[in-house]
Image (tube, rainbow, N blue to C red):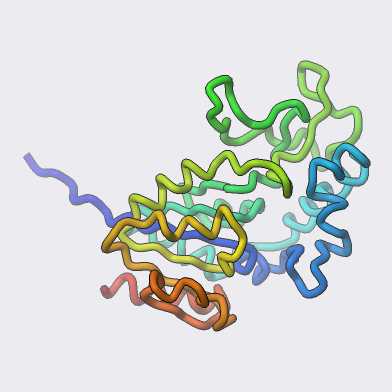
Length: 245
C-alpha cells in the first residue's frame, strides 16, 4: 500500500499592496482617503447608522471598479503554486482577485466585497462561530429597500473599522500549520492582523515582499527573507526560490 506524500503547507498573508498593482486603490493611498472618501464616512458602523444610502452607493462603486481589473502576476503565481504546495491564503483584502487567479483556499479576514448580509447579523452563528460567506450581492447594486427574506436591510459583508474580526482565530490556526509563510502587500502595522506572523511554528521560514524597505522594521527577528520589490515582481522571485529550496 502506498501513501501520497504530504504537500508542504505554504501560507500567504496578503494585503492591499497586492491588489493595488491590479489597479485597486486603498484608503492608505497618499492622503488617507479611499476613492476621495474619509474612512470614517464609509467604513464604520457609525457611518452606516448615519447614512446607509451613501455607504451602499460607495460599495456599489467599489464592485464596479473590481469588475474592471484583473489578477496580476503575483495573484497568478500563488495560484500556480498549488500544483506543488498546499497553498492557503489569508487576505486582508475584500476583493476576489485571489479566487479569480485560481487560488482555491482563501480566507478573507475582513469580509468580501461581492457579498452582503442582513444589518442585524454580525456574521456569527449561535455558538459564536463566524459564518463564512454572507450572501452573494443580489444584483449589480444594493440599495435601500433591498432586504433579506426576514425583511431586514442588507449591508456589505465587510468588517468595518471598530468591528470585531471574527476570522482571526481561523487565521491564527491556518498560520500555525505553515511550513513556509509569505507576507506580501502589507506593512503588518495594523493589529490584530499584524500579530499573525507570531503564530508561525518554530522552523517555519518567513519571507516578506514589499517595495518599502521600512516595512520589515519591527519584524527583523522573525523574517528570514526580505525581498524589496513590488508584489508582481517580488512574489514571482519568492516562488522561484521556494521551488528550488
